[in-house]
Image (cartoon, rainbow, N blue to C red):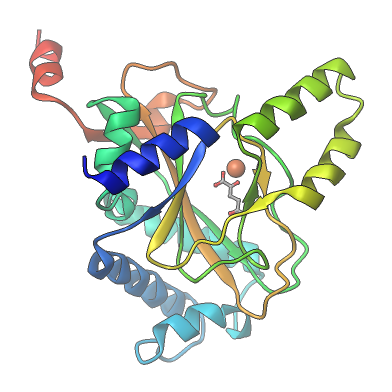
Length: 256
Ligand SMILES: O=C(O)CCC(=O)C(=O)O
Ligand SMILES: [Fe+2]
């Protein structure tokens, strides 16, 4: 691993999250093009080819045939018809970093999650942690299709903050949730993530998003990776995962 990957791993191990600069931008742009093409197909927009980034940012101006959630679910369903869609987002240097964190035998989430957050829409993701629905042994990859800052991105609590929150919740037997939530929303770490970057974080971290106060629609994908032999969460492992990478040794061992 080169110096920048080592730094990401160190940051991840200390704080439970890290930002990663993706190196295969051409491939990321290709994913964005595919996505915009789908958006165009499912909406009444004639063409998005000419000004793609702008079209994504101004997705809230699209003439939709249905409500946003139905549109989003239709998009997800079409995206998941593209074989290995998440693998297309598992871009260099993520494999090196994730392999270092989780080992050489990796599972990748079979279906992508898509978040479309329009300006001033109130259906933002409440403060939550993906654990224990997802196992603590997974890494979440969050990839925006537009530039995100604190007005339209995600926020999270680092490992120390998350631990402090859990202690407080346990001590109050869950009664301090509303207070903890209000405090988090006040001092949460908003991580600016531009197109071309992604965020990786532990499923155990508390995170969420606020109402998008920018004037651009935020579109982001998220998916998870897990070591093949680590504990599963509550999802059906046979539906949730597919193999991303398997070592020669494991392949041979599994053949017996
Ligand atoms: O993108 C968001 O606002 C929330 C994403 C999320 O909760 C996740 O990736 O686990
Ligand atoms: Fe989440």
